[in-house]
Length: 319
Image (cartoon, rainbow, N blue to C red; front, side):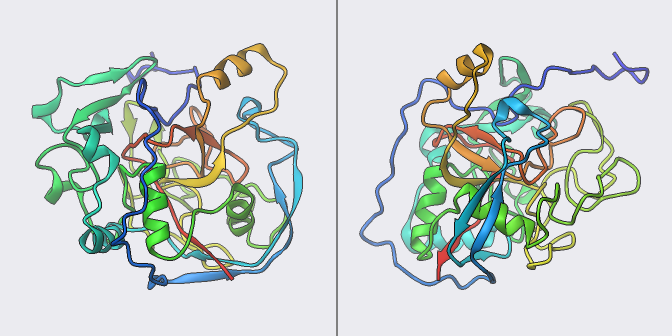
C-alpha cells in the first residue's frame, strides 16, 4: 500500500485484455460496402528508409528491440484516429454490426462503470478490467451510457481488429503496418522516443499526450484534463501534423504480434497469443510506473476479436 492508501501494482501484465475461448471471427466485407475515398483529413508521408523498434528497450519481452531499418513506399495516413462520427457514418451506410455487439459484451475499465453495474466479472491478474454486458462503441461504459460517455469527436472504441479492417476497406484504405505507424510517428526526427522528441511526460507539469497521472489503477488526478479519451484533435500534433500518435487510444496495426526471444517465460506467453495483432501508441491508461508503452517503439498485442474502452485505430492509404 502507498502512504495515501492506494494499492501498488508492480507486475507489468498485458494492458489490453483479450477475449478467451472465442474463435477469430473473420468478418467478410458485405456487398453493400461502398468503396469510397476517405473524406477525413489525411497526411502524406514520404517513403524512404525508416526505423522500426529501438536498441534501448524499456520492455524487452515485448519485442521492442533490436532496431531495424525498413524501406517504405510513400503512403497517406489519417491525421487522427477514426472518430465516433466517422464510424457512425460507416454504420449508417452499411448496417455494420461490430463484434462487441455480436458477442453482447466488452471490456470496460473499473472506474468508468456506472454504479448500478458494479457487479461485473474481472480479468484474472488485471481485475481493473471488467466484462460489461451491453457495452459497445455506442454504449461505451455499459447499457444506457451513450449520452454520458459518447462524444462524436472522440476516437471510436470497443472496435476489434476485424471491425477496423471493415471500416478501413469501406474508406478505400487499410490498417498501417507497424513500420509505417512508427515512421509516421517519428515524423522524420530519427530515433526519438516520443512523437514530439525526448522530453518525458510527468504527473505535474509536462502533458504532451493523454495518459494516466497518479497511482495506477486506483487514483487518476486527470492533470492533463482527461479521465478517459480526449477528442481526436486534442494536444499538439507531431511534425507531420498527426494527432495523438501516443496516448489516448491504442491503435490497431495490420501486423501479427511476434517476439523473437530465447526466454522461456516470453515463449510461454507467446504460445497464448497466437494470431494476436500488434497495437501501437499506448492509451489514456498508460503510466510509466505500470504500462510504459506510450513510446513509439513500444507495442502490445491482442486477439483480433477483442474490444476495450481504450482500443481504436487510424487508416492509411497507398499513394
